[in-house]
Length: 144
Image 1 (cartoon, rainbow, N blue to C red):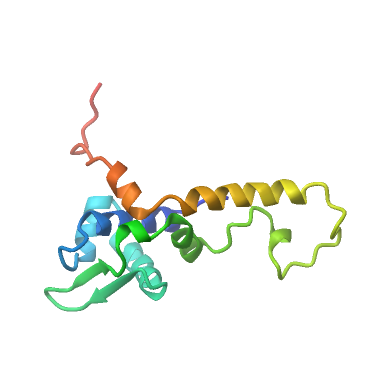
Image 2 (image 1 turned 180 degrees about the horizontal axis):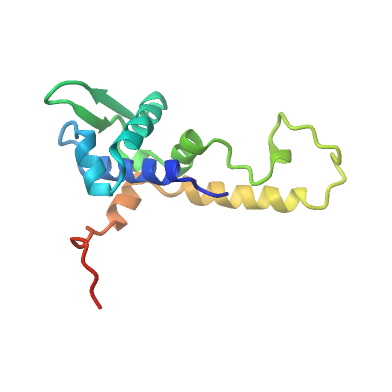
C-alpha cells in the first residue's frame, strides 16, 4: 500500500480538525497554513471528507469545517479507504477481479496477510491517536 499526497493531506487535515474538536468550524485557509497544504487542493480533499461523512462544512464568515464524530471514533482505515480506495496490495484480492490462477496461486495468501495486517494497524489507530502524537512545527528553522 502506498499512500498518495491526497491521503497524506487528508489525514493531516483531520488531525488539525481533531486538535480543535469542539471549538467550532475552522476555515480551510487556517488548516492549509497550519498543515502546509496547498489550499486549492485542500478544498478538493475536504469535499471528499465531507461526502464520506467525516466532516461538516458551513459557509459564511463564521463558517469552516468541523469533525462530525469524535476523533477517537474515527479510525485511519476508514479515512484511507475513503481517500485512496481499496487497501488490497494486489488487484487479484478484490472480489470483482477474475484471477486466471484462482486457487493455485502461491502468492495470494501472502498478499492477504499483508492486507490483513495493514487493516489491523489502521483500524486500531484513531485520528485522536495521531493528533496526540503530533508536535507543533518549529517556525521553519533548522536546528542542530
